[in-house]
Image (tube, rainbow, N blue to C red; front, top):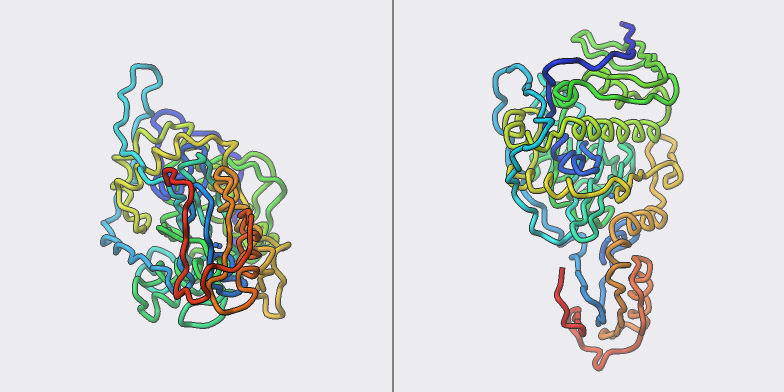
Length: 433
């Protein structure tokens, strides 16, 4: 069955502002301060290349050793609370426009380490909740509290990766397999583990939203403004009705105010251009959510709105951490935010449509995206000493360290070749992050 759907310019609503939601909190625990997000290393990007051991003696302000792929812990998600009965979407009056306004007493994010959150949109309708589902969208949102910087890295759904315990498959199947085979922590945990294994990026938390939740996010924002760069035509967009089929989707170019359903269609459409274009549109939607939240001074409403909209999302972040992240993000300037994607320059399309990663090129992207800012600030200088019985091992490790942005000042043999484990020595004595 073919239906037709169009989206056109609509003026903003006046009067009381129907307000925002929480994926824009976790997405806007990054969005709020000028961060946009919502919905992949020592032994890091090497997991895309090959696992390797590391031996290093350091002259640096800080050295952090991340365990290899087999040693990365998998946090167990907090189960989603039972879905509440259908309620009217939250609405509040706009925040006070004139001083004095009561200051918020939000919790402080105390940690100094970079925090990474896997944002997932799942291919699921509200009546399908609880069933195994693939991820329609995967992004890594990252915040560095020290450098006051942040970013969003989009991952294509058809990227070919190693899924722990299940072999090689497209990255969007990891969540499905975790749910279907009842892996520890379910779909979110296996999706986190998959990203960690293949990109070497530690994933601390996750946030997941389904189609209905996404629409609720945008509707509680009273819609979002999107500058559509070119006409979007999709003759095969999947219909949302029970009889399935498809609709003909058209969104005109120019500035558009999109409500929840049309914003979802704009972000999901796959036949109007490539999957890379789709990722760009998804990031554009999240940025628009950020702008709308900022225009409404939404941070003042977080303590009330986060619990009220709990049924729209799932996460292993508790409420205090959500609020603390939002507080942290509020102070990050827009110019300190980076948006990237694993795009068509970093993959090769296979005969079946799967995307084979160019591992070294993706490794370079991940290193620049997640580590270079901190490494430049530290000015780390390393000595790599071979304490094993394998000739050339120090040189091999040094190359991996240099590939990840470290400066290697010396490569030589250690005082013994019988070391049983890696030893890291900090000669500076300075305070660690």
